[in-house]
Image (cartoon, rainbow, N blue to C red; front, side, top):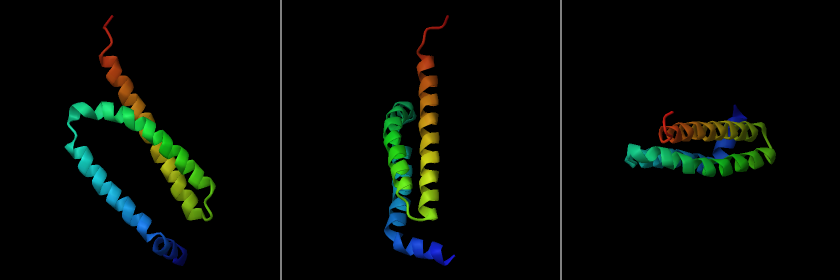
Length: 100
């Protein structure tokens, strides 16, 4: 337990940034009209590809188990977001195809 508290106190700024990013992200998404969600998700796929690569690099250079676990969670969540984005984009593009 002491290791977790030490890790949190050493990386306190990082935790503040993550919480701030969550609130800013929620506010930004709420302001976007529903018509634009799918095109924005397509663009976010490329950004999350970079996030996944960055998380893999950070995870490879981790010096303790907590950083490795956090990196693994980032890779899994980023991958789920990319795959979900491609699925939604594929469904959107199917709507524009001519019916047989």
